[in-house]
Structure formats: structure tokens, C-alpha cells
Length: 441
Image (cartoon, rainbow, N blue to C red):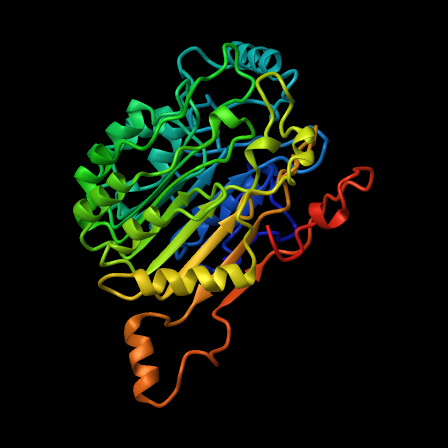
């Protein structure tokens, strides 16, 4: 069971109250720092917690008034955490004093806060990064699943030899000048034990960098899979969609899928980006379905047409693109199209039959932004997910035939998740049905 730990009356950072839910085994929290002390209290008093998912984010336009880190006490210990998810917790920070700063005033406020804290503390007790306190309180050797939603160079460098039982890793590589995975993350991957599940997501490069970023690079497959491929059951390699045409995310090639098939003989699930540029990528489909061990797929499709993307110096999507056949990338996705693609992929599949395929269009799985200065992008909220499950392979057809049943009368295998567009623009001259993707995008 997961708990939000909203339990009045709340204790203060200098108080500890007994564990109020001793049977709880997991904590999942997304919000600002207002509940961090309650979470810390549970971690230091409830012995059965094995899973912690901590996602810090702004909520609303007001500057947060709570610290965004645990008030560690040296004698406290966490229970044996097997599964840890952590995002936007400043592991590198020096026990920041005060609230999370506003973006526009952040650097000055941070410098002043640190200077004041340094002046007020005893010189005999130097401040330490927050990660050091985590390492004292938590036995990372017990960790089996790790999800890092934000980059922390210090974490990757300090923890690469501290995770002997790690089996599953999910990490984000924030864009650098060429959008490649930083060396410290590659060194981390090379040092941790062989994994059964690996997810790497590369964020979109900063679109208004000066000078402009000229390209995006692919994943170094041989470096990644040379260490972990033989044991991998699940592999996810994805990149964020960019709003600039010259920075469209690159797709894996047929040779890349050949490498995956070679390095990952036991792979059950693959999550990757695929292109649709007027036609479906049949050569890619053939390469994917040649991976005999696969039984499920997640395929991510871009939502915006190239003519609708902005250009260097523009802000985001280019409205003029709407006069060139509409904003959505072709061919469109719909329930009927998803059903046809699922049937086609199942028919092409070699080896194990496909049991499930997910088609994700746009930002359907993206976390909603809840902070200040909110400027929604054209594509926000338009994402959809089509989930197809069942048996469409040759063996299933042979079974149906031998039982005297054909496949023509089968009910649909797919369902669509997501509603109509929440951001229609009534002032635009484009017909509303071109903007609101009710069942096709």
C-alpha cells in the first residue's frame, strides 16, 4: 500500500512521532517540500517501508516556503529500501537553507543563502552534500530498482560502486551540447551489476541555445548493451520530441535493431521511438519483429508535422504550418489504424508471438507542469496512447481455424487512452476538427 502521509497533526522538524501506519510498505509523493518532514518521519520510524517514490515539483505560482530536502539527524536510519524513485531532489546541494528560489532570482538568492548559512555555522563542522546524509541513513546495497528523474553528477560518480544488488535502472540524460549521454553516466552503467531492466531517456536540447545546437546523437548501443544486453529483459531507449525541424529526434536504424537482437537474446519488452513521415516505416517494423524473444512493444510517435515546427529564433511550434495540410504528422493514428498495425506486426513477428503493443503519440506520458510562468505548447494535452492486446499471430489464427472459428468476427484488440484536446484555439481560422483530435492524430 502507498500512502501520501497527509496525517494531521504534523510534527515539526525537531519532533519525531511514532509510526502511525506500521503496515505501510511504500511511500509515493509528488509535490513541494511541505510534506518532506512527514515522509522523513515515516522513513525513520516505520520499519516495513521498502519502496520510496519522491518527486518534488512546484505547485502553483507562489514561491515555496518549505525546504526541499530532509532535515537529517545523524543517528537516524531508513528501513531497507528495495525500490527508489527520486526526481528534482537536490542531492548535490549543501543542505540548502531557505526555500526553493524563484527562477528569475534564483542564482542571487542561492548565493546569499549559502553565504549566510556558511557565516552562521561553526567552521569546525563543514557542510556536506545532501547525498552524504542519504548514504549515512540508507543502505544503498539493498537497492534493487532505481529511477532517477533528474541528473545528479555527484550521485552517478559516488554511487556507481555502491549498488551491488541493482537489477533495474531508469535514468534521464539531460541535453548537453550534442544531446549525448554524459561520460559519468556511461561510467555508471559500466560499473553497476548486469541489469534485467534498463530505461534511458534523452531530453530535448535547449531550443534557443546560443550558438544553436546543430544536431542530436543516437545512443551508444555497443557501449550500453555490451555490459547489460545478455541479461536484459526490458529495454527502453527514447528521446523527447523537439519543436525545431533540424533537431528532430533521431530514430534507431535497421542496423541498430540487429545489434539489439544480437546483444539481447532474452529481451521481452522494447520501448523505442519510430518515425512516420507520410508512410509507415516498414523496414523498421521488419527489423523489430525479427527480434524473436520479444512479446511486447511500446512505440513512440512524434505528433507534429515538420512544416508545423518552428525555426531557429522562433518560439515553439510555427503557426504558419497550419496552412500546409494541418499540424499533425502523417499518417494519422486512430483506433482502426492501431488495430491494423497491431495485426500487421503480429503477422510479421518471428519467434515468440506479440501479446501487447502500445502506440504513444505526443506527450501523453509527460508529467504535467504545475509551477509558475506557465506557457502551454501547441502539442500539450494532445498526446494519446493506443493499447493493443491479444493474439493475432500465426499460432492464434491456426488455433481459431482448427476450432472452426475465423478471425473476421473478432472484437477489437485496441483501446485509446486520452480525451479531446484541452487547448483548442477558437480564434484560429483552421476548422475545429483539424485542431481537436477526437479519435485521430
